[in-house]
Length: 437
Ligand code: XUL
Ligand code: CO
Picture (cartoon, rainbow, N blue to C red):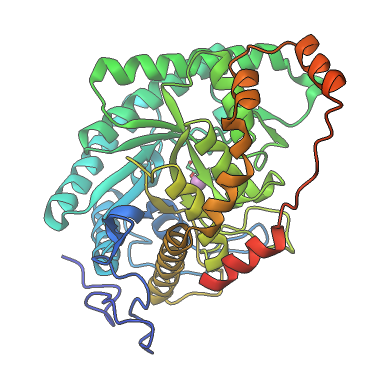
């Protein structure tokens, strides 16, 4: 058993808003009941493998900056070391879940057969750690973007053999996820897009992507995987344009291929902002179309255009997000996956604790404040009242399809209808938000 990496902490406690302890939660009290459930059950935190245990601080101009004890070790020894350390962090944080890509835990071999064997072995190591700690798997996924074979896409590659390889990889990753009791399976199409339309047949690639997802759905049912399949929209990076650009684009795609009852969305904060949308918009769209599955929590930097994947720290942003999530009935089988990484200068392993503690407190504040806003009721009442006339006969008849353009025209002309504008009261509503934030 390797010695603990996070040796300054035994377990991160909830110490209350007055605490000065940098290794304690000030707002995330897992047992606190809000809107009928504990914070633990609402938020379902997950610690991700890739940013915490694969990423070592490199950026496009510079080398690794983090020293981690498994670096320099090989094979299973490194995998065990990494897994023990990962679960040390997850356990100390009291996070109920983790997430991983196949390639986070096992490297690429010369053939897929040689890749899958160590994946199984290392999956067994994770299973042992899960059993020891009681930590569960929120979701697994396949990395279909790092290897050069996927440079021109995985499912959307011009070469059907690459499609076949990606299919084989997803089959295996989904089976490993299922074997570990994963509650969801995520598809993030990092390379499913294009760098230039000069070499891209968009219609062809879209057909391929639709077929691929049907195969994934069929296999899910075949193996009896009861988790939710999730697509994670992102508009760009690494490609210039990614097909599953935002919630609405994915929705249109799912409907076109008849998949909207089979696949939900994993909405990520920084992907929304990269798409020129807000996180809350993406959530509201997903809720309005019964597509909300799970969330990847992080944030971008308003000064940079790219996916900086910083830990969430805006309680107001999360309050508005949880208003939408609570309106939609919560996260279901989903959760809050911290798809966020340390800054390159945060070289002390304990910075991983500060990061997740701050992120957890931000989400807890957001949830509690959102529940308070909804319970206080004035925003909800205002919104209901704003649409109340659709409950009256004219509104009902229009929506029921019982009025034609002729009918409506006659109504306006015959009665000299003169609808009066009413205030949308945005500032008053924003003041109500500020009363809870
Ligand atoms: C990339 C991203 C991925 C997915 C899983 O921006 O968010 O880490 O969450 O592949
Ligand atoms: Co993500």
